[in-house]
Length: 331
Length: 304
Image (tube, rainbow over all chains, first blue to last red; front, side, top):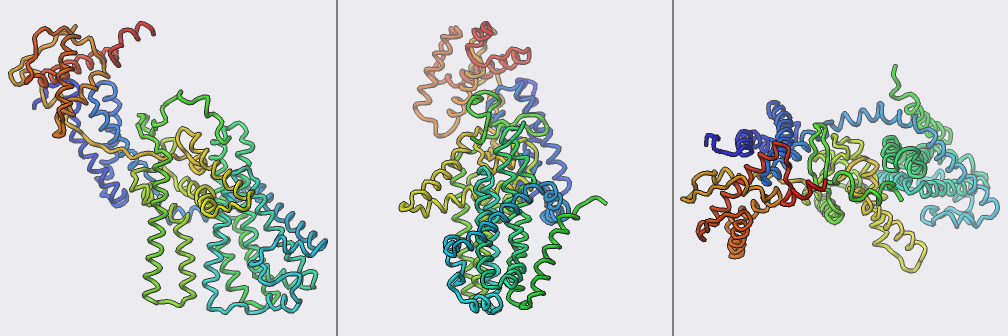
């Protein structure tokens, strides 16, 4: 058909149909193979044809009344748009950028929320400590029995010492223990973070409760004159683990603050803005918990010397701090 | 409670199915409803669960490792079918998980830009607090303790209310990440009716229309006629379509004052000729800035 006897919009279509068909096949390839594995010429054509198709769509909306054509162009352009604007970054590059620049910068920007996280944890610990000395029975109120593991006000001082220095699990089970701790703690951290959006309160409560546990536990051992030993036992992983909980809480608080005090923005906007840093905080916390789980299951059981325990625990803590303080600064 | 500009603006502003890409030509991408998203989520949960179980069974029958490391592997596998699976799947498949692929829905950036890794991580981190935990609470709902069950129900209500109140059906994670979920459109190019049956001289009927005869209808009627003609072309066309065609031919004839009677075998040819002429006429009027949306175009034009 030479096109002379066609009406204008049909001519418009017949002139461009071959390009649209080609774009359609390219979109299919991109969707099944992925943009990275396409040949250079194909990827270039995809982008060029997509822009042509958007133009065609804009024109067709003005001049054509063919419903089928409009629907086709709408769908085709939309599919091509989704291919052209797909995320292009490699996973490795993402990870490196996060570790070297994104995470430390986010930590520095949201220091006030992290500080608040630590504050709530400390307040909890203080409250737990005082309450224990007021009445020993508070210990049972806070502590779930499976966590206490037989350690309580009724336990003898010797058995407490035994659990601090003893080989309570053989080295063969350590891997399983680490895996369990890692998945359990990471979920808690993601959770503390996610809860922050419900107006801060759940995140604060959870952190405070963690502090209460810590305080009561500490008080029990101080009462028996084992305070320093427990501090050593806890520092191995606790420095990392408790900081991670506080940081996750900080991320949650940031979200909660955006919901409670959005300022000039709408709440959705404020949340989106706060999310940029908060999500990095949550990921940092998850990373620290992996480290904490490894420390807890291997280092704590294998290292029995008190000073060495302090050195490992606080040394690792100092490394984290150095990363947050110095990482990603422009030289 | 979470979104401020909700109820008052409903029904105004651009349609929620519009998405403006950087090229500036708005695209129509229909927002996926809550039902289809719950379906995709359930499919994901079931599939990952089956995959995890079969992997573990395979490993244990191979008996490569001791029972203790088996528990370690099991714990890690069950951890990784949670949040990590969703993040990695959406990163790898451009905003789709297995369930989303099956349901043909997809995550897009709300502002029409490209999806960033940040938003995919964020929207899936929120899954833990928004979907998994309420789900667990619902499964383990304990009627004996009133306080916890009331808290659980309130929480679940909040989680459901946020997307229900939102025009784009965004859950909290979507709001934070700046994303929403759409149905993937299917491009399907049908034949052009005007090309199939060129205007002049078809099957012996040489139907001509005069300009004033084409002034009665607008774009809506034209496209309705198009739908009818396409339905007639398909093999599943029924007796009802034939009856409808007969009525419509008579209606059009009366309306436009077409005196010559149309014999039954020529009815479809008449309609196609009318479609071509009407479309050409309307498209030409359009080029002159006279957009006739439907047959009431004249009266609405006076009102405005």
